[in-house]
Image (cartoon, rainbow, N blue to C red; front, side, top):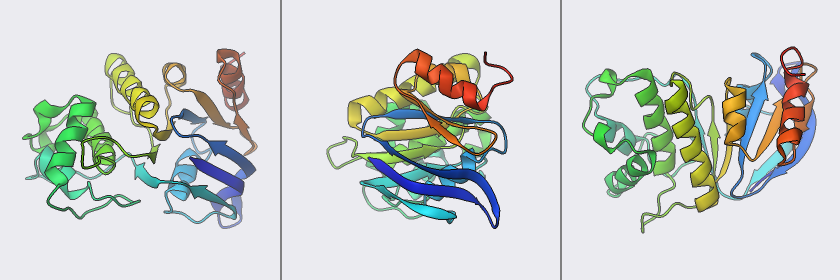
Length: 235
């Protein structure tokens, strides 16, 4: 569960997102939508503790894990190596590991359906394959001793970036299913708003004036929230 109280996001004196409050429940998969430069990545980084808020506060009842886009690949590391060294149960993009790391990593790869990539050098992966590996590294940090998934907040910045239409749909459906079946709270951004809306429970949209609209669960309500952010393409 994530509770946000009177939060404002920005840099210095520049306000990107004006004061807002809301609550995300366990098991919810929420689409974060807005134009380029609206503050989507800044909001995700703030909730991950990587950027200071201008005002307000937030509280997460479980571990929060941020998955950025543009993670650097180092030649000579297999996918399993990468997952092992980034699967520490920490709130940020970790680099340490323990003797249970491989067990957690294999379980995460199984959930993302990428077991066949385990021994591949990460430098040889396509952009889409590597994006799935990055999401798997976040899941690995939530795998429990019994191979279950603990509650947590996943903050995903463009998880379907670089994927084709079919692969994007599979990944977003998998993320949504994991949220519902394991009680994860997921907040993810996407430029493919119509496809992403299909796999989200609600929509959190950022308007051009920095105001927030948080939809209900109905399709009409989600479309209305998207319309606040994309008035030029949604009627």
